[in-house]
Amino acid sequence: MSILVIGSIALDTVKTPFGKASNILGGSAVYFSTSAINFTSVNLVAVAGEDFPKKHIRFLKSKGIDLKGLTIEKGKTFHWEGEYDWDFSNPKTLTTDLNVFAKFAPKIPQNYKDSKYVFLANIDPEIQSKVLDQVKKPKLVACDTMNYWIEHKPKILLKLLKRINIFIINEAESKELTSETNLLKAGKKILKLGPQIVVIKKGEHGVLLFTKNHIFSTPAYLLESVFDPTGAGDTFAGGFMGYLASSKKIDQKTLRKAVVYGSIMATFAVEDFSLRRLGTISKSDIKKRLSEFKKLTSF
Amino acid sequence: MSILVIGSIALDTVKTPFGKASNILGGSAVYFSTSAINFTSVNLVAVAGEDFPKKHIRFLKSKGIDLKGLTIEKGKTFHWEGEYDWDFSNPKTLTTDLNVFAKFAPKIPQNYKDSKYVFLANIDPEIQSKVLDQVKKPKLVACDTMNYWIEHKPKILLKLLKRINIFIINEAESKELTSETNLLKAGKKILKLGPQIVVIKKGEHGVLLFTKNHIFSTPAYLLESVFDPTGAGDTFAGGFMGYLASSKKIDQKTLRKAVVYGSIMATFAVEDFSLRRLGTISKSDIKKRLSEFKKLTSF
Figure (cartoon, each protein chain N blue to C red):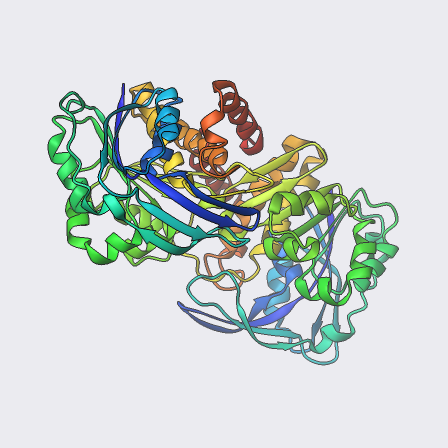
């Protein structure tokens, strides 16, 4: 079953303790799609500027991602510049140039409107809501957000939460949204806000999954060197949603396996700048890492 | 098989966001023993002062802990006073009165000298070494330490590491000892310093276990309310060593299960001040929590 994803396309400039890369391919929709395409077909809705290099479009097409929903607008592509220090947990944002992304008003192509699986990457919850209005009868809608929207558009966000099935956020956001310091309490509280499934990403400390009757906790796959964590969260979401869409079922067992696949996909994203590693993996790389993950965590 | 533990007995004054308790029973040897006694017999070597309440001795005896190695010296019992804020990760130490603990020179009772399982709780590595000199042919020696000894007695600590089998430390200590920010690298580096087994405790984020050919990562059991984290690390060590001593084997499967038992025991310690919860649990409480832990983590 194909997934509809709405999010950003970016040209990022990223500095880490290991080096710097300028104007590299990034953006939530790009990381999500490149991850999810390993499991199912993906329809991408996003906007780029006239400066967006043709080679990136060729790359996305070569992965099999459907780009009918990609529009090229006058102006420059969204640009983010950030810097990570050794702890890699929170980048320092140096520049955010919204450019063509400032006026992003996604129009869902006609033949995407029947999408059953939808991922609303982190953008203004107002836009996320308008996208949702255009989808006819989705089976499973997941959304992400960030602290900025929790602080600036809480009402719209809370209204959106009642319309979605899966809310995927990170630890700090879950605490901010619920005013809870305890993640178990935070997760349970978010379930009451609407979504039937809550996923809290803890970065190098793993992931928590909450449903009405179950909680699942898993550590992260261990990497000796994290090179660039940009996009890890969206890559997780891509693996998670990709696996769900490919399995069709949404029972506890499937959800847990989806979390593990999401975690594994994220490890590929952080092993190099941009999509350099994630964009070149094969099914057998994923299979191998899944088997290593099982060895790492079973008792 | 019984375990010999050498460590502190303390009267703690602890302040948390939930309340304050003064002069309550604490100390590494106490938490360790009260945890390990659920799995095997325990011989405790420690020192207390004349002010040490008889009721605490009665309590330890009632748990079945062998106190032939407990000496009561002239003066006051070791006293620690600390305060936790909401994140519970690092207490602020307000007072440390070593008292009788300042001259602690443990003499191992004759009939403890054949001990096969030994736990050297966090004390001066010089004392830990002298204790080890007195044990004839131990099968499995585990030790703990803290940042203070890594900074002030690194040579003696490194020499000790070559004589022990299991090193149990926390995340920050492992990073400080190895000058590594990455835990995978830190764990592997510590293995090269001597111990065949390295356990890195990550608090609410779980535990990592390193051996030559395997790495095991497990999340922590989730609690809605952590009441007082004092003693969690020693309680972990007690469950870990207790399970190992009771199983006799030291293969990978047993080690992993020992980590899980250690993690579970620690959750009881943090649910109330002092030994109020840990000291009153039954075998069925442990069994129940183990089954919940499996449900929480399996996929």
